[in-house]
Amino acid sequence: MSATSLLINDIRNKLLISVGVIFIILGTIGNVLNIILFRRRAMWTLSPSIPLLLVASISNLVTIYPYLVLRTFLGFNLMLVYTSSILCKMHVYLYYISIVISSWLMVGCCVDRFFSSSRDVRLRSYSNMKMTRRIMIIVITIVPCVYVPTLYCYEINQFTKPVPCYQQNSECGSADIANYFVFQSVGPPMFMLIFGIGTLIHIRQVRSLEPKVLASAVVKTSVTMANNSMKNRKNNQANIRLLFTQLDIVSTPTHIFDIVEYLCRILQNSNTDY
Image (cartoon, rainbow, N blue to C red; front, top):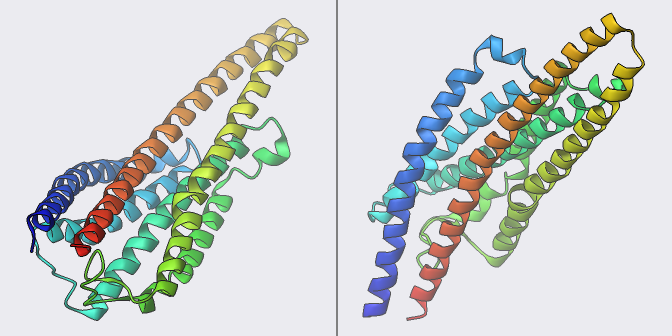
């Protein structure tokens, strides 16, 4: 093995170890705190989207354990699941469904905020626990079915590939890339952006309507409406800050880890050229 190959392997291993350990520590602390907070029934009265955040946090822990831990072990040259075909397949399958379920549940949170912030009574009626349960059922049912081909495509002893547990052929690789862009990389952020912009538009519409409503009301009613309006405005602002903070916490580490993952693959592919 050349000096360049040794250097590339060393860089790859250090990236896996350093980034993996940081994500495991921060991810575990953050998601455990989220679970403790969001499982409280008192929180569920704030917004129907809270149960979605709870399930998303649980799904994130599945992503961290075992996938991220085992990937970090790869940096120490400990291939714990790459010697068993079944463990290899389940390892990748659980990673995909957990991270994609989490992403689409966050889309569900954006949809709920879009409905609840509307001044249209019909749209606001869709923001309820029944709709939340439907979103969870749809996501948790569809995503595992979409990634069933993973159980066939991934196999061990792929020593010419970036990692020993990898796609068997180019067809599997193309399907994997398509699923990645549609269900993980492009789809969720695009819908989050669309419904996030829609939520901001709804809030602006409500704010522009409030002065007209208050001006046409009697004094006592105006005071009551003003108080209610101020309370609703504060609740909207608090929920939006909560939602976008959660979106940043979920999406930013995911994309950073994806960048590191693909950088490691590039380095590994360069390694095979020497």
